[in-house]
Image (cartoon, rainbow over all chains, first blue to last red; front, side, top):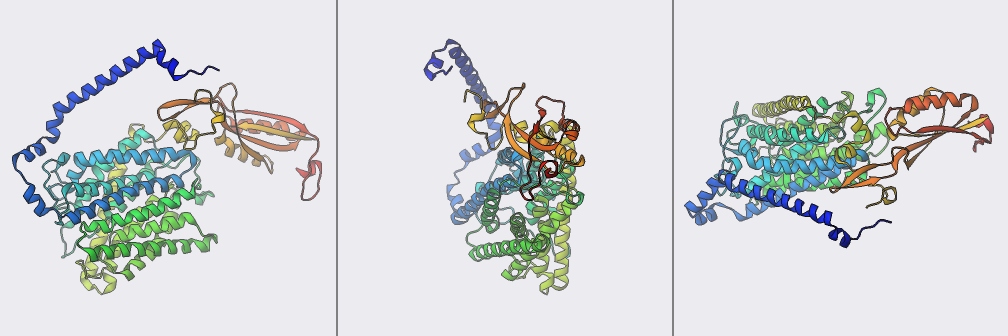
Length: 490
Length: 113
């Protein structure tokens, strides 16, 4: 047995030499980084640093920032961030064993990328002052005021607002990866993620939520309302995912239902189910947090209750919808069902009552199932159901506000609840606004995915896919073999 | 006369081999997930930046019992379906089987196939 102790390794002359060279190299690198930071730092943080020195703002900041609203928004931001854990578990559980590491790595790296991109220019595009199409202030969060007031003032501190919006942007980019599981090359994933988190989501989001976005211009006295993002986050994410899945093509050997096959089963239902419930939990930040105000206590309570009821109704109706077909109580469909209910209630949650929420959720369940059937029929391989759950349920959710809005909380009365001609116009504005975002997202993403495909990095090689994308791209399976099968030296 | 064919193949080729055997009149088979190595001798994988070696690579072992007349033909069928031309495609072999009994009916020999 040739086992080297730590002591003998440290004494080894060759190893000492190697270690010193190695350390020297690292030090050089760190030195270079310091030089770079001092040289370029003022460009990145310069104006903000000057602002602090120029005028003492302490008194005015206390006047503007609301501690309770900021704390509430930050708690909500943390909850929305925790949805990443839910997405990772859901996607990993619904994936096959050979693609689990890839799914997890994509979600983590998308989050890291999105944070830096949203800081650098995503936030500026989305929430900066600009025109109807795009914003262009607050690049690198420069010149940030104490609170963000351009789209309504609740006294939330600027950075808390940024963090909350970053968590939303991250959600959108993660949805995309869900329909592209098992065959997307990691370099291709990095490239399209930059496009989705850095450009598509912020720019299209600006149209609906940014200051002066063109979809907020009233036509006939009404315009698109989207409280927490059925359109902005979910329809957009779902349709980017659809474009990705179409351009990629199905996983090798995937047979579709109409060809006598079906979706290959996910490998771990425990992980998938708990991931789904974590998403539901995170949604209590997503929807109620979108009030950006703890003082609007009636609003928070209403939104949270509506969110719960819609999810509950959708889980049951989705399960019931597939029961006659298979005579089985299907867990995968039930998870996708309640998620569809959550996606649907995301837009109308503030402006409907509990009856409306239950109806919206109850319809969302079958909508998700039919959506999954439709995607399968079109021979599009969507392992997680991202297109149906986010894209199609997102459409229904946005439309539903035009039907069930009570008119008590600042939105026009819905068509089905006696809204009359204003209700009809409002419903049309919802349909039109949603279509504008959905179609644009699909079109731009379709181009983006083709561009990435041109670089040859969008899809892994056939050999790599057959070997399993985990081992091919990441060098490791999710579930390592017994130590007995490994060689010496571990 | 009965013979047992045993094949060690790449896991992702199992579906092709199964379809080819079904198309050639084989009605049942047994497969086992196994690990092993031949001349290729293992491969390396990574964990947190360091490499480790997997000596025993995952394979699928497929077993069928057939009549002597069809055995050589079916070995050809398996070899053709399992072939990728790259290292690690596996092996197929056969040996004679003394007796075979179907538990449910008590049928013996070729009738029990």
